[in-house]
Image (cartoon, rainbow, N blue to C red; front, side, top):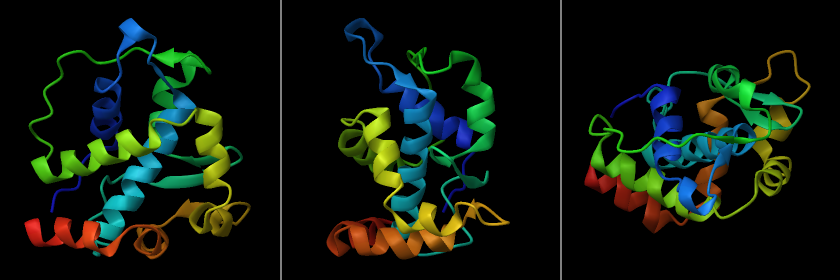
Amino acid sequence: MNVYSAEIIADYFRSRTDADVGDLISNLKLQKLCYYAAGVMAAARQNDEFPLFAEPIEAWQHGPVVPAIYHKFKEHGSNGIPPIVGGDFSDIDARDRAVLDDVYNFYGQYSAWKLRNMTHEEAPWLNAYDQADDTITTAALREFFSQEFDEDYLQSYRTAH
């Protein structure tokens, strides 16, 4: 199982946008897509030692945030982040890309603010927000998303690896 950088995962989501039709991702939305991808992958992998990416996810006021990604794109404010056109993502395992595509196709349909509100109702953020250690752990993601996703979907990922 591969552990990627959060930056390559964020860039993969950016590569899925189409600026020609006004489909851009804000920093807020990108944060939530990274969170959901980490959650689904934690449930699929069932191994806390192999998170989707190595960087921590923290519970901030507006939901889960990967600080490294936030700081990289904060200059864009609430505006769209330029997409990546023609990026090479062959370093991401094909099965992992399929999960990222599923996350993008499902969660990407929602606005940044809708995703923010959704995360505010989920245990990983609720249990970490306003705590001394506001890190959302891979174990917390695994526990929550294992209950949220169809077991057949998660099992298909496990048997493919």
